[in-house]
Length: 279
Image 1 (spheres, rainbow, N blue to C red):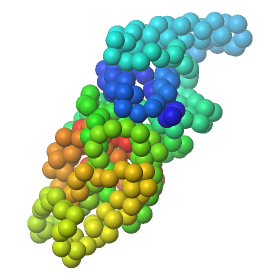
Image 2 (tube, rainbow, N blue to C red):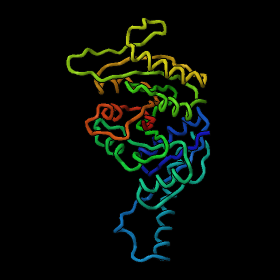
Image 3 (cartoon, helix red, strand yellow):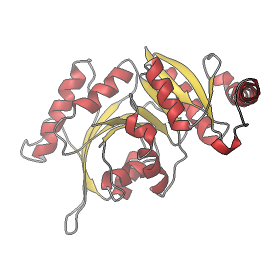
Image 4 (cartoon, helix red, strand yellow):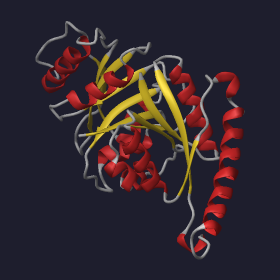
């Protein structure tokens, strides 16, 4: 049973994430707890403490709980019954980290509207929440069907963190899993997108085949087998377009990321839901 925390606000991004999570619950065993953080600047707090501040905060919580309940109620026909949302008052990253650590969640689900600019994604990845999160994060950008999934593999030889996280969360789900080994086109290089057959020549794409073999072995431990394996070398824009047919993308990102990172650019462009784990 996956113990997942779903962050909700009264906005479109949260509505999309909520509906996606409900679809995911149809395919895997998941216990979903929603949470809303009512952010208030320090200058907005009433002076003093005690009864006045407690009453003020209680009113904020009640109003927020009603707004989130309306969002959830609008989708109740297509989602399993859920418990009351947790509502906290404070700084967003701080409160979510506190909740994730205190309750030992397996997954955080968050809605982030898809953008063709990398700045919003970069800001998220660099945030305190993403830097210190104790669990993987599922970033939902569009309302898509999560049935078809792909794992993004690169030159990093240790694929165990990504495959292990994915299978821990989704080993019981249905749908197909593809393996995609990618690299970014450099000046003067040709581009290609090739499906790799099981009985193809071993000399072609040697590094990719070695990584595929490792990933396949890890999947086989859970009696799962990839439907397709692809080797891609192209620009981040074209790779992200290829990945748009998937409903769930698994990827690892480094703990230290740079604004001009090609990997960051790719993950920011992918329109599907992205399961992010740390290397």
